[in-house]
Amino acid sequence: MTKNNVDIVVIGGSAGSIPVICELIEALLSPFDFAVVIVIHRSKNVISEMEQILAVKRKEIMVKEPDDKEPIQKNCVYLAPQNYHLLIEETHSFCLDYSELVSYSRPSIDVTFESIAEIYTQKAVAILLSGANGDGSHGMAEIIARGGTGIVQEPSTAEYPVMPQLALDANAGAKAWTPAQISTYIHTLNV
Amino acid sequence: MDSQTQLTAEELNEIIQLIYTQHGYDFSDYARSSLLRRVARCMAIAEFKTSYELKYHLINDKSFFAWFLETLTVNVTEMFRDPIFYKELREKVIPTLASYPIIKVWHAGCATGEEVYSMAILLQEAGLLSRTKMYATDLNPVNLERARQGIIPLKQIKEYTTNYIKSGGKNDFSAYYTAQYDNAIIHKEYREEVVFARHNLAVDQVFNEFQLICCRNVMIYFNQELQNRAVHLFHDSLSPLGYLAIGIKESLLFTDIKEQFEAISPLARIYRRKK
Image (cartoon, rainbow over all chains, first blue to last red; front, side):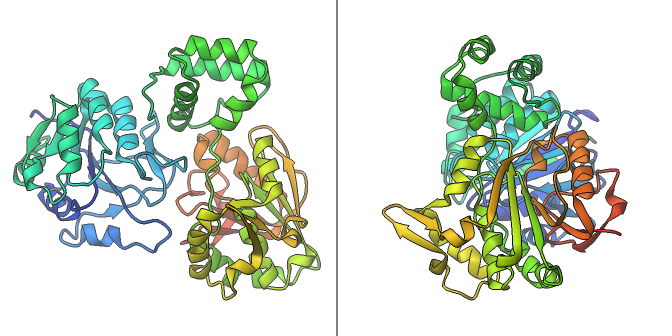
């Protein structure tokens, strides 16, 4: 991987994904030269401490829920807010959307993957982790079709293998990696 | 469904232009990422394969546009969405509204009215509903008609009851509606206090002066220019020290008028117009 090949890394996960997401954040070599966006299926209308849960081990990395129209910056980790879909505008800012559920979810991983594929094309990396439904497969296909990189957690290492398995079945071009392999990849991005 | 229908940025521009010239609705300053999804969704539901088919129907099929507009705009809403917002409203805003002899409240972009009735319940519990005039506006006439009826699918009531309790509600939530078959209907005394009318934040002007304006999760569909226009319109529609409530993930930071507002609840995104 040569320098500046990647502008954004988007991580989608559902049931069983949080420990892996923490591991991946841990692997970031800061300051990192790209933005990280995390989309997790989560409860709505509750006071959430997810930002703190994810940020706990690396004090210098701030995990932030973006506001609508907030510009996307490098060296930042963003978490999709509860009860909104997270989209990307062509001006490289976030755009929230409170429309119908997709795959029984809002935020939906497909929606964010598709939007990132559209705007970031080959400079996007999508990572899909453990989960129990079919969200993310279609978005992963969009990422790969536009020249981006698709990585799926090796299903045998996932607490809930359904989501990564469906994504691999639908996407021959996706890499099936263990959390350790994904961590190594993230650690060496853009260096 | 999701967006199996592909649509390019150029095709979207042509469709926006066509809607404006044929039907007078201006979507040119809507956020492109969400608008693209909405148009693609309309095409998928209508089973159109190309943007040419959509354009054909927008021009030649008179009955099509009403369906298109209803499907294009986002009409998702909940009662007591973000209970923390209603809690802050209860504790920090409503007590100060009591000092006005007549209270005027505007819900801009009310969709099917769930948040309007949530607010009406709060005002009733504070003993203020009888001297409040509530205006609820939307650009979509179908939404306004539904909102007027105040009918809520019964299967959502459980969730709304939970939200109501989390917002600090002390009453029995079922005191506010009558259940019949699969629906709940909001009691007449709440429906009668609301004036529903069409208003389009993209083109329409100030129409009254308010002590509280609620516009939550509406401006997320706008680009920054249109957000700016809307916030100016709200500023000019508020009495001095009037309140503006926006969605919990919306921000005034990206507008040129942010200095004219003071955040009274940064968490719940409730602002107050400076004098």
